[in-house]
Length: 139
Image 1 (tube, one colour):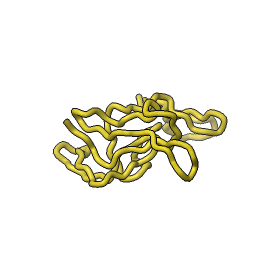
Image 2: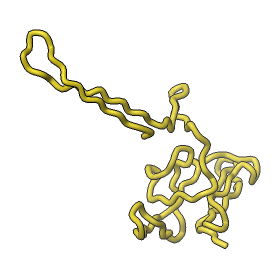
Image 3: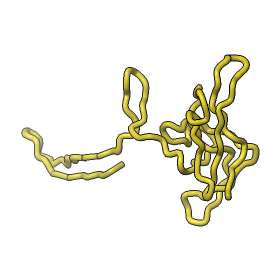
């Protein structure tokens, strides 16, 4: 939400002796999705430079709707100062095909935490798909 504004006004309607409150409310939101031909599209490009820890895809931002489960849960900070929370995975793009490693972005950065990605051929489909590592790399 970007901003909120509320204005109260007392109104007297014809044929009614009482005074009634009237509220004018103005809410402004930052748009995160648009509807394009029946499908939701992100308004901004996904941030591949930081890790978003998750337990399910519902916790992930637009464009990174998949919660990739790691081999070992990771400790992350919560919304309260000093709060520590264990999370099972990191947010990654949904499953997608690739032609080479350049089509599969790594998640995060090596100094703050990174999950590597590679383009792996799938025997069942004959196509290659992006696959993410099972652990967080920190240097």
